[in-house]
Image (tube, rainbow, N blue to C red; front, top):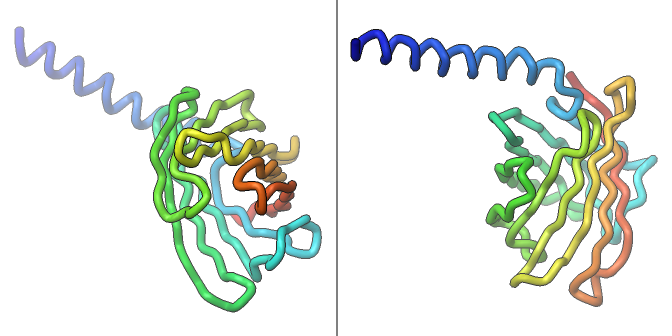
Length: 158
């Protein structure tokens, strides 16, 4: 009896991961995105380049971002969040220490970045209907010297 129950659980777990991978391949939000610097509205100093990789995980996303600053300094950051509207700690960003994200639909994610329990940013990731472009729009709300709007235009790479 125990081996039958174990087998059923194993099949369900394997099916979940397999189907999650199949559906993730069709998810327009996932994949590699490259910043189109010329078409973006960036703060000063503007980065030279950004490559974002959105890797699907069950119920969320892992984002890996390779960035080259205006001064030519390369850096990599990553975070993992679930699309459940709860706070998730992140590190490496001096202006944000937690993110909250919610999947609105297949093409849209809305979120909030917080620093020390204060809302620092509100953002939206919006993928075009053809899946080739993402607009990452950020309203910076805190600290006062960073208030403003940033719009990153990202082109799909894969």
